[in-house]
Amino acid sequence: MTIKLDGLSARELEALIAQASQRRKQLAKRKPIATVRQKLAALAKAEGYSIAELFGAAPSKAVTASAAKPKATRKASSAKGSKVPPKFRNPANSAQTWAGRGQQPHWLAAEIGKGKRLADFAIS
Picture: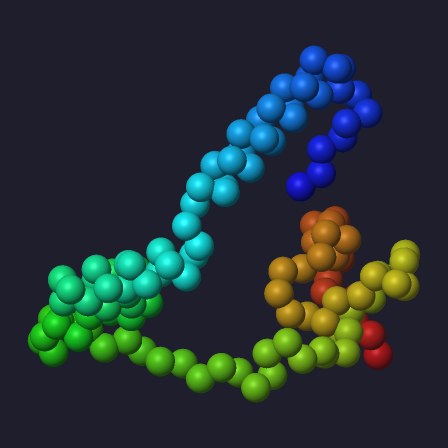
């Protein structure tokens, strides 16, 4: 976080310093995160829960098999994120190309809207 101090008046700087000092005191009073985590884990365990159950890391196994709906699983595509050579080029600006995947670029959609065909922009 960056605060630009150049444009602040003396009164605004004093207010900012006071706020920062107050925030620093609040943070100093806090207990270390590890201590709080240990207390939470102990409290959850005493009540018969795990931290994962309470904070959503995994669903509870208490759900019966009839109530649980199996989710369809999909394999991740091995081609995901791979580059594909461009198939279409803007004749007005040769740097603008499209591989034919995803939404059409604005320049291509505009030309098709004017009545041109997609094949007119194909790279041979």
